[in-house]
Image (cartoon, rainbow, N blue to C red; front, side, top):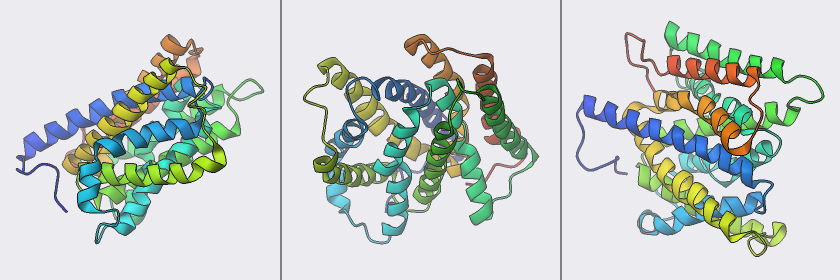
Length: 304
């Protein structure tokens, strides 16, 4: 399979492209968290959102998956894990978790934990050895989750669903990250195949689950078509694939430092969610941990 682009970039150019791609992704992710949290109770069901999330990119990228075929030779093992980790199964798990979680807390429990999950899988199965700065980042990420947990105990706090389901989603994304890195697929091929297979799975589930497209407000459908289908489904997936190819899986995932704080701010401003001290501190601590996990302070570049 081909790599991203046709002309290799020099090391500095590749790193700059990867960093810019990753930072663009986390801004889209923050918008996606707020948008998904808004829509899970506002007319469209999780399957409807998933159809938009993967169906629109599948149509746009049809020439790509038509060329590769649905069963690309030598990539079926990693592709199966990629679909599980970032396709329709991942989306349904996250949508269920976010039904019970404010966008501010979801920013800590989902994208905030993704770099930790990526690093743990890299150490446990791929022989990665983080330096002291990246280890400090992992500790900070865990501390952020602990602060969020401590600040939301009690009858009015977050439930077990938030603290269980969203970290599972973060782990699934980590599986996707490492699988894509080793699949041999480029960003367009990976995105196209994930989206077409996810669309097939969604359509297979449609007779059993049903749809709310016929009763949902047109404005809501238009909003989610942009945020789910075009931005999160197409643009962010392509940019994330580019970042993984340019930086490596672990470092690309670590550039989600902005997401917890951005999601907390977006949830407060756009959804009028209460921005408690524990959520704000947890978001900042987690973001700092993710920033350390990028390896920016390391003497040697992290492997991914």
